[in-house]
Image (cartoon, rainbow, N blue to C red; front, side, top):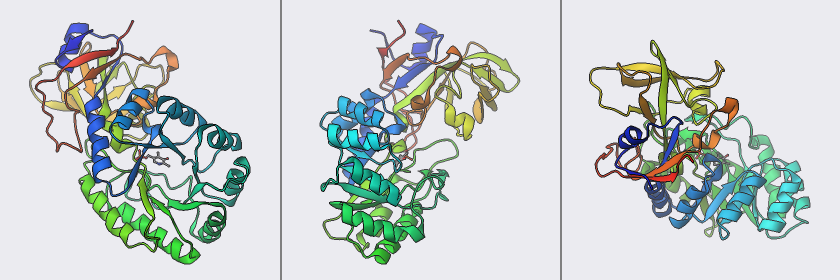
Length: 397
Ligand SMILES: *Cc1c(COP(=O)(O)O)cnc(C)c1O
């Protein structure tokens, strides 16, 4: 088994030709423990952020027992990987066949919905089951988040009363859920959304058993450094405690990004430099979809000793497509050149999960490392470099 003391040691020993994924189980464990111990309710992991079975096992071992799944393939994956996990099917638009299979074959009891049609679908597909937890998804503002989730899903204010009353009739437990958008930069996003929840409960006068504040908990990236998660939890707790709900009601959340962003980074090689543009061997069709399509900035580090000033670079990925471009800016030493290796950090969420094999690129080479991620919401912002070790996880054959 290969063993190295750092990503730098790994590249000088192996000179990898393909991009290499580094995973940090200890970082995912730390994030999961933080949610389990500090969120004032139950934390469901949103599987779409990173469905790696290794990661699912780490989260389970760290106390995450509930999983937010959005497709029947995610239902099957989590059921196969974690047979004792509780699955919650939180996509508000599902195939009737998927609801049927989830309910009858995998014991899924929790579903979300945002229309009367979807409610009918769930009732039909489960044979009029009496043991359902049904969560009505409200449309809320994404103003305080970096990525909007406000356009596609969620019942509008004028539909909510009827939908809550009808869902109450069909549900054993009635929930209300929302998603404030991904990478919510202020705790106030949740306070605002919970105020919408309050108005909906008052208007419909229904008994609500579950309040699910969804995902959106941030990680930390260049130019997107949020307040501490403790501030989010405190704001949610305060507002929740004040809602007109039964005292036995449960509070849930569905973190994706916050649980796994620190889990992975990527080592890429520079194949060409053209001015301040670097042609690297991973890109928009690999782990850098968000860097290309929504201008997300990830931290970068040159994996060799370098002197002098840093300057701003943009990246081109390896495919023959102009869209395979990451504008950055990514700050690196001015003398970076072809043959150099770069570590791109914080790709555990919506990074590795988005990979394709388009144009024959994309690689499954990975190593487990024990050093700290390039940034952390759970450590302050220092990155202790000493004592790092790297072990082979799934090296190229
Ligand atoms: C994507 C998603 C999440 C996770 O969102 P993050 O911003 O990654 O925390 C949670 N719930 C639902 C319904 C989602 O679609």
